[in-house]
Structures are given as structure tokens and as C-alpha cells.
Amino acid sequence: AKPMTVPEFIAAKGRGQKLAVLTAYDFTSARLLDQAGVDAILIGDSLGMVVQGNPHCLTVTLDEMIYHTRCVARGTQRALLITDLPFMTYQVSPEQALISAGRAIQEGGAHAVKLEGGERSADAIAKVVSADIPVMGHLGLTPQSIHRMGGFKVQRAEEQLLRDAKAVEQAGAFSIVLECIPAELAKKISDSIAIPTIGIGAGVGCDGQVLVYHDVLGLFGEFRPKFVKRYAELGPIIHDAAARYCEEVRQGRFPDADHQFKS
Ligand code: KIV
Ligand code: NA
Image (cartoon, rainbow, N blue to C red):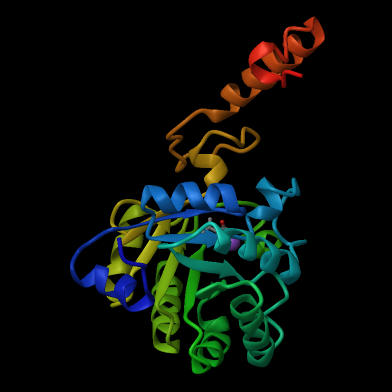
């Protein structure tokens, strides 16, 4: 298949072709997802939770995002690569946003960046887009706002969300993530703009979907939101493999004749 591009990503909405996006944070997982045919890979700041083990993503740095983006880029041939701008790397000023986005592209090898916020982030989005760096917006539950929101909660402020979506589109974004928004409202937002919406906990009316790698594969047990569908249960499989390995090593059954060199 041909590499996915930003114009192709936008055009998919016009054709009614749904977009399938997953997160990844390293070479091996990115290669598996790319070969499975995902349209885009998001190097999300969710890595603060699923890779680093923090309770939220606020401590993730731009250097860490760049490092993981480089790992993912080496494993990807077809998928569009979108890197999250982490907390405090775009909120200070549009100039700061552009410098951060530029690093994600130049040092990380991303094709596009994602940043959170609607009207409040419109100037930052426009500035980044002015340098021909494609931007994905992110509305609804914006995890970098966790302390204001008081937790991971469904977002229902209809008028504000519709205004935010328009503002992000007009600022020049090529797509918007809608997170934890009632399905009907997410559908209304999707119908109100020309660029594709990518939903997570936002129902089937979005133009595409995104989920977190560890959630889809059943690797992350701590947190199980309603919108996550587990397409595999790898947690118990890895647990059993590791437990059998320990047992065989301790019993002197591994390595056997097949797994050692002859003199
Ligand atoms: O960080 C992330 O993984 C995200 C997606 C869940 C949209 O922002
Ligand atoms: Na994110």
C-alpha cells in the first residue's frame, strides 16, 4: 500500500472512508501496527502512563516524545506519524508551539503534531501550520487539563465544543481528536466541519477512531475505561510465558538440547 499522507487523510472523510489510528511508542510495536495497515500512528503523551507508569501525562517532556517518535519512525513505512506536543511545550506562545513542533518533525521524524485545546490554542495551531507543519487538534477530555477537570470525565459542553471545533478547523488543522464526548454530540461536531474527526470514547459518528496500544491489546490492567475494546488479552499470555520460563530455568529444563550450541 502507498504511504498515508495528510491530503489523503483529509480526503478519506469526503469519501466516507473511516480512518483507523492506534498509538505506539517503540520500533517493534510500530512495525506490527504498520504492517497490519493502520492509517496513522499517534505517538501519544499517554506514554507517560502506559510506558513510564505515571498517574497522568503531565510530566512527559518533549525530548522523551522525540525519542519515542524516532523509535516508531524506524518501524514505519506506510502510516502517517503524529507526535503529541506534551504539556508546557506549546501553551506559552505560538512561537514556543512552532519551535516544539519543528523539533518533533526535524529530530523525531514525525509527519505532523497534535496539541490540545480549541479557541485557546487557535493561534498556536495557526503559527505551526504557517511553517507547513500539519497539526491535529484535540477536544473534549484533554488529558493535559486533568487538574482543572478533576479527573478523566466525559465532556458535554456542546456550544463550547462546537465553537472549539470551528476554531481548530479555521486555524488550519487537518484533523481533530474528540475524546470522551457523548456519541450524538461527537457526530454533530463531525458533521459541522470538513476535516476528519478521530474519536476515542466519542462514538461511531466520528470519521475515524483511535485507541491506546496497551488498552487494545489488554496490556494495561490498571485503568479500564468503558470505551476501550480489548482486541486481545496479551497480559495473561505474557504473564504465563514469563512464569513458565522462570520455572524451566529453576528446574534446569531450559536451555534444552535444541537451544544450546554443540562443541
Ligand atoms: O496520548 C494519547 O494517546 C492521545 C490519544 C489517546 C488521543 O492523545
Ligand atoms: Na495525548
